[in-house]
Length: 526
Image (cartoon, rainbow, N blue to C red; front, side, top):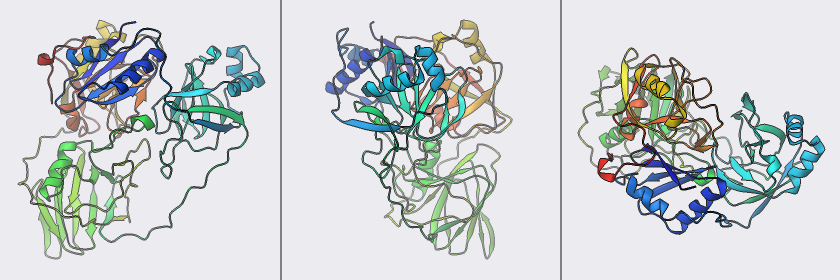
């Protein structure tokens, strides 16, 4: 099969290949002979998701450069590791009997077969440390459950679609459960944090795991700095996100409105991508335990409460607090997220190169709630910029237009369903989060086939079995198994992160779905 190129966005495309071996062989070829301008590659069951550097278009020229590196049919993937990990398992999974029936074996025979083969990690995704492992025994090509579970315990060993995986943390999931292990799959005290990485081999044995000791820090005293007096939602630390961790199944995360984060930092003289506090809606009240200079950008309005009274701060402007002063941020009339930057930065430790809090992966600094505090870092800061004019943010009764690129899986939907997707207004539901915006409208139907897991970009609009779209935001899983009908263009992601529940979204495009990327001079570059 010749590689098929599917559009995702102006700087992202999906390469579809015949099977897993062809996918990994091309992945190996691209690692051995990199294409200039490629920033990241996310391998999956039959696809590679290619993201380019800023200013480099994911166009026909890029597709041609990738196609020229495609190995001859039948080329085997190169061995990428000699490491073999032993995983002790207690075989008591709820689906063990169903798996045995499907394979035409007894449960004991399934266990013996599972232990006999050597499993190898093909790629990682879904959650940090979740490895998709394959073997040579074709009997393990099993379907997902017809109805996914809402809760799968951490350590569950599961099978689906010729893959074996171990759930690193409690999540929903649709794989067949055959057992459980106590061996941690992802541990930030370990380097690398993921036990299973592409190329690593694994053998499963029956028995209890010898769990290595994890150092537990002594309880910390509450720092002196900025204390939370009142908040309606947890306050998160966010920066521009953690890049380059796809090999461990870790997505970028980061601020949902990067423009607002950068405006707040520039207003106090910090580097634009420094960590700041992401505040959702309101009301929020914070108290300064020492003198400090702050700036708020995004949806909220800052009001300083001090002994002399109350002072309303101009949007995006820097303001000073003395010890004992408070800043109040009421629920905004438009938008839903604000970013509070501190001159000299906050004292937070980076995790995997970033201080972003990933709410799906549970990576990054803990959320701040009532009674918590965060200390200043006291790093050198530079000159401040003039406050930038505030952007117009959406209100809860507004229809917001978001530009999209159709693809990569638009052809899984009939022309009627694509028209329904584009022509109706989708309502933002209260179940939305940093993982994704859940939408409600006239449901979409699609090809009933099962899609092998593949990479998903921020802004991807996935259509699950319910037919109600989910628009992925910064904390989305790295891979997904539902078709993506379209992807929000990068320049609209900040706006998407500010759309409040109750508002409606209309997706717009001026270009039809085109499996082969357009020429470079037709592709917008942000």
